[in-house]
Length: 169
Image (cartoon, rainbow, N blue to C red; front, side, top):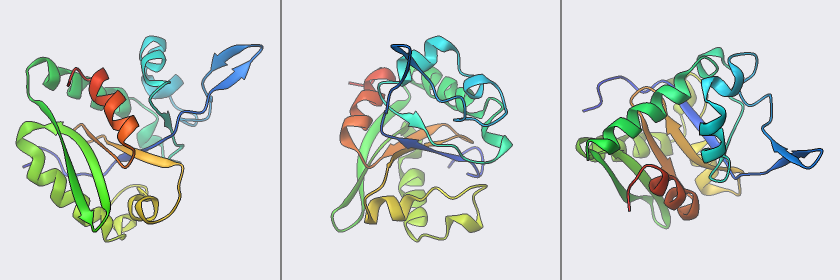
């Protein structure tokens, strides 16, 4: 069982480099008016930039360190050998890849089922666009759950790169 109720899920999009005078830069509006890069260091952004970019969520809860806290939690779980990966079919032909604490697999799959119902706007701070992303063409290819610290993806390449970053082969 998750230690915390899921309320914040950060949408992740396909990487799309922005160049300014030949230098790759991050969109300053990913995290609105909060901390630069939501509190992520430049080194962390360099690691993540080739995997995904952050979708602007429109709420301050995403701007003040929730993303680095979730990633830090996942890195700690990985270093302790507690992080695992799997895939789950939420509907026929709709496969989702996920990275989570090894004890949370059933909870993650239950959450994916709940998200696929499409009414997440009722119980999340901001909509995940999960169902729409799986059913239609969308820039949203992954999600980072911020309250407990796990990630899930519709894109296998993004999943593979993130798993490798987290130290999971």
